Image 1 (cartoon, rainbow, N blue to C red):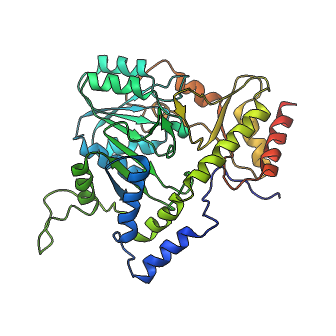
Image 2: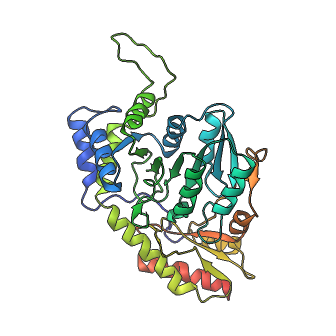
Image 3: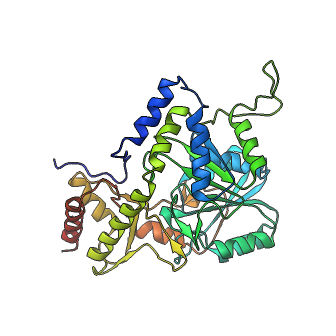
Length: 370
């Protein structure tokens, strides 16, 4: 069996930055969800993306959960959410006993369709929050979305789990709305093995989120709790990994761009292939290189051919309104997300791939066409 090629796997720095920060955590005995690495990782991420404050948490999912709490989402509230996303975007809405309404995608961005969003506001005027996703590192059409949300005076939370290093009109995705979240899961562009970050210019609420994330323990000599809290704070050890990874983020973005351009150059002439959309105002990180197939060849044909040669790929996210757990909730749109799901494939986008690996993948895909 040929050597495995992963869809996207952790890629530690050649310089050993991560090990140095983790060693520091061990040497100082700060093996806990607090310490210098946590504090500095928050500071460094906030500075990198251009916000006033950040809170280091155990996952991107927990960051979305606390963002929903921060904007006041409670039982029975309606939250608009893109349908074309991973379930981690929608699940925290249910954690808060709120009601998701799923919004369709547009072809221009693969993200939330502003027209469908406007239609949703007409149907549901009493909305508590809008969750926006920047799918696969592609920016949503934020000017239109923010204009609509401001008109209706509704806060915006950006799920930028897949788009650290992606810019919309010069602004880092995740910093345009009221709150943004990033993920450092093992498959993300940089990783802490597992972890997330909540960011905002609302320093008071970021401080509050840290309080919630440490079991909402009141300042008292004894253990006293006046609110429900969560065990969501990032460990000082994994924060050390994150600090090291942050130092190679630009290298990872450069390689992700290279992988995408390689695929596009070699494959876009094949009949029926369209690559993920590009817009003049968008500077993506190309976390995953994705394409749609509009001819006789189907995504499963390619996935099976690659799988046979020990190469990972996967379908585009299955829309949330098609998921068994969410099919009771409303969906607004024309089914564009279903078309992208049906025709889409995520190609291997691992930053450790060589040109030989990429050519191997290209040759297999071309064989499927032949």
